[in-house]
Length: 275
Image (cartoon, rainbow, N blue to C red):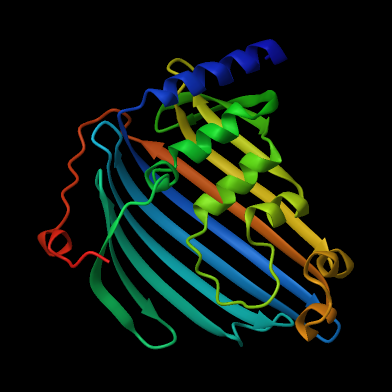
């Protein structure tokens, strides 16, 4: 299709998504994080898979997420250790309720934690706001081909979002499950500085302009010299680094738009002591 038609499809998709009342979301995100040093390369691979039910009308959400992390050095198999966790989270209008289990460095968790919902947590947690930010900032939308998802004809679109929107999306996806230490490419400013490109594609229903799937693959990289300009070279961990790369591969699959959704916070979570 023409650039004008592609832009109109994107505008219609933004308008449609802004008025969603409820949806389900299946998300799968992998981050490969390589630190090159003079003597070795370390690799930290995080994968988080989430299943989410969102009731926007009543500001309620249930998210179940599994997080796996493995570290290795110079291409070995997880020689640095393995870390896994499962997090069960509910949001209502005022509170978040979280139950987490960890494995790999001692099995812990299972106790419900209740806390007041910080400003902005609902918006980033339900995944719709970071996605809409990507869409609104997008340049040069391009329709690539037609496809079908769950029997629905879709248009596959390539977009080029703003670097700031990409950084915000990465932050919204990452549950902060890293066990690496020292200088990193985390944080919005660092992500903006080190973004080197990527692929961002959407599957949009041809008739109703609903987003059925979103695939994102941003790439971040920094040289040792660039890192030292930001962090200084007083630490050995910085002076020995020759480069860092961070690659994300994310897929979001939406379903059950505007369908009735029942989200009930368990009684033990409601009765937990507020932090």
